[in-house]
Amino acid sequence: MTLSIPQHLAALENRLTSLGMVGVDVSLYGSSGDGYAKPWWIAVRYKFKDKGEQQDFNAKSEDTADLGFHTCVGLVHEHIDNLPTPEEAEHQEFLKLLARVVEKGRDVGIDDLVINPLVEAMKKLSENAITHDKSARF
Image (cartoon, rainbow, N blue to C red):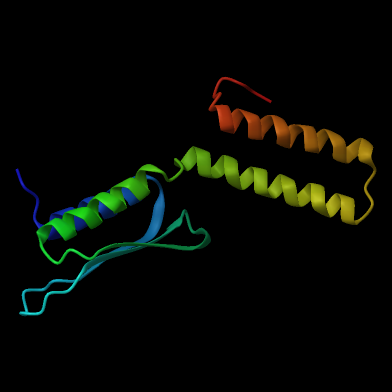
């Protein structure tokens, strides 16, 4: 079964929403059947669980035919495939907070006896994330 353009766009929105994204907007620009050939462009906006800044991703194709639309859809799916899962995003957010605590501690002169274990914890958590060792616990 071939999906219509609105169904493709809804599928992209659903994928982002299933990853915990909010404020999802998928907009299509391009060839509209008005007699003017225009490149296809899909603009995607989202935020992760109301945290952080709005993210923008634009998929463009200079091909004005239907192939250009499908190229853009493929680029958006590829982008979504590379987004972190909700758990990975939470992990990344924790690491950012921990890094800020370490930096602030150093700025205000907190003793290395307190700071160094935090730095080691950051390293261990980062290594687990890189190797995707979900069984490793800190």
